[in-house]
Image (tube, rainbow, N blue to C red; front, side, top):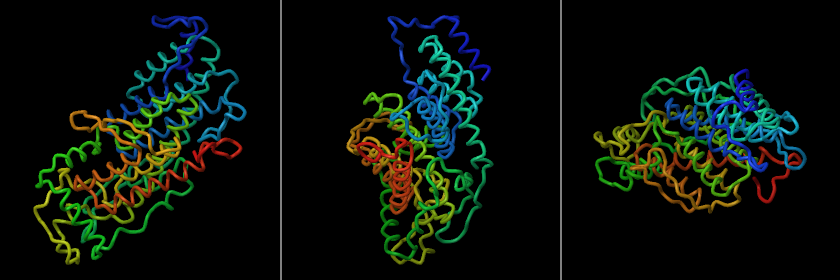
Length: 427
C-alpha cells in the first residue's frame, strides 16, 4: 500500500518523464482488462503453472477487477458483487481501480515479478493523468485486490496433495499431484460435487469397446496423420503455456476487444469466464480422483486383462502425443475447460455463432485457426485429446458436460443486476 501511495503521489506531482498531458480535457483510457490479463498469462507461462493453479490465478485477477469497477457503480448499472460487496469512494476513476486491483493480486501471487507489475501500474496511472479521481480509484482498487487475495489465501489450493499410483485393470498407474483441488473453495457454484458424473463405461461394455477402437486407431503414433497431429498439438497446451483456461481467456479478450465492450462489461465477462473455469477445475479433479481410470496407452497395451472380447491388445502401441498422460483419464480436463468456456461466451453474447481466429501457445508454427463459433472450437479441442491418444471419447463428452453444467450455474446466479434480472438473455 505504501508503494502504491508513493507511485500515485509522484504522478500527481507531475514528476517523472513520460507522463502524458491530458489535452482538451480528454483522458487517454487504458485497455486495462487486456493488459493485466496478459500479464497473468505471462506469469503462468513463466512459472510453468498447472492448469488448476492457472485457472485460480485468472479468476482472482478478474474477480478483483470486476469488484473494483462494479463497486464504483450506482443505481441500475450496479450488479451483484463476485466477492467484495463494499461500495467504493465517490468520484473514483474505474480504470485506475481496475488496474490497481489487478496489481494488488499479482504482486501477492507472483512476487518475483513485482517490479514488472509496479512499472505497469505506474504507466497505467500516468496515462490516466493526475487528479483526485485517479488517486481514489487506485487506492480503492488496491483495497479490493488485497481483499480478494486475502479471501482466497485459505481456499485449500495449498498444500499440494497427491493420489498414489494404482494397480490392476482399469486403474491409472502413476502417482499424480494436485488432488487438493477437489476440495478447493469454489468461486461461484454452490457445490462442485453435483457436477461429478457417473462412472466411465464398464470395461466389458460395448460403449467402452467402441471408444477403445476409436482412440486405438486415431491416436496411434505409428499411423501417419499430419492433420490429426497438428490438431492435437494446437490444443495440447503443456507446461510453459497459458494452459487451457488461459487460451479460452485469450479468446474472450479477442472477441470482447473486437466488440469494444465498455469497462464494466469487459470485467464482467472475464470474471464470469474465469470463475467458471476455476470451478470446473474442482469438479474435474474430483472426478479424476474418484474414478482414477486408466489412460488409453495402458488400456491398449493390457487389453487382454479387461475382460472384453472386443478389445485386442497391442503391447507396442504408442500414443500420438508421445506420452501416457499425467493424471487419471476420466474425464478430459481440456474438454471440461472448453465446454465451460464455450458455454459462458455463448451465454454472455447471447449466441454461439461468433466467428473468431486464434493461435494457441502450442499452435504448430504459430499458425492460427478460424472457427464459426465457440462450440466448434470446444468440439475440436475435445477431439484433439482422442487424436493424441490421451483420452477416450466418453471422457471428452463427460468433460464437456461438466463444463457446460458449471457454466450454466455461473451464468444464471452470478454478477446479475441487483433486482435479479439478467437483461435481454440469460447472462
